[in-house]
Structure formats: C-alpha cells, structure tokens
View 1: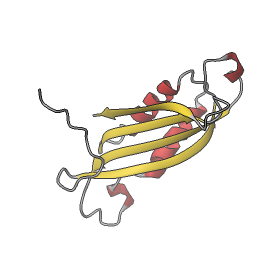
View 2: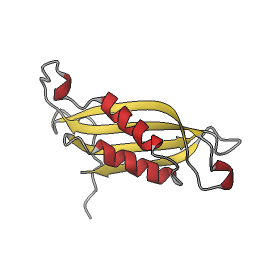
View 3: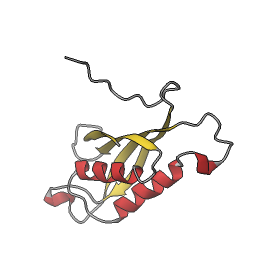
Amino acid sequence: MSKIETPRFASAVSGIRHVFIRNLELPAHIGVYRQEEGRTQPVRINVDLATDDFADAQDMLENVVDYHVIEKRIRAIIAEGHVRLAETLAERIAAACFEDQRVRTVRVRVEKLAALTHAESVGIEIERTR
C-alpha cells in the first residue's frame, strides 16, 4: 500500500508559494438553530493557499496571488446572506480562491466564536486541490 502524500504549502522543489490569511474575524449570518437566525455572530476565517511560485515576481502585484482579493471575495460571500453550515461557507470560500488559476491547493478553516458557552470556538477545516 502506498503512502498518500499531503501537499505542502511552500516548496522550492515543487514551485509552490504559500499565501495565507490569519484570523480574519467577521460578523456572519450563519447557523442552523432558531437562535442563530436573523442575527449575526462572529466567525474567524483562516485561509492557506498553495500557489504557483515564481522566483522573480518582479515586485509586481499582478505576478502573485493577492490576499486583498481573497479577503474581498470572503467578505462578498458572507454579504450574500444566511448560510446554515460552516462547511458550506468553507466550500464557498475554497471555490472563490480557485478563481485565481495560480492557486493549486486551498485549506480553509471557519470557526464560530460564540456557538458554545464554554469553548473558544467550534468549526470546520477543509482542504481542496485543483
């Protein structure tokens, strides 16, 4: 039986650059329970992207994956309205990241910060590869 290799998020040998967003906290309409409907609650989002790496990006933004663009896409998804599952939100964020053809792999973590009284957060993490 062969070992399944987990993709790395930065590798000079494989030509992969790691672009990330850490701890983006936003109010979101999310949840399946009655008390979650009609109100926002805080979510924390983390995104890791394995992207094509060019040793010389020529100090030009258009030659790299722009994390500001990714943030705008996340905000737009949340602004679309109520999402029942954190899993759904994570999948939508991953799909939006793949709009940039240079993105090879996406890891998304969505945490609900007020879901359980005695827990800092609850959530989901997914990883998708093109």
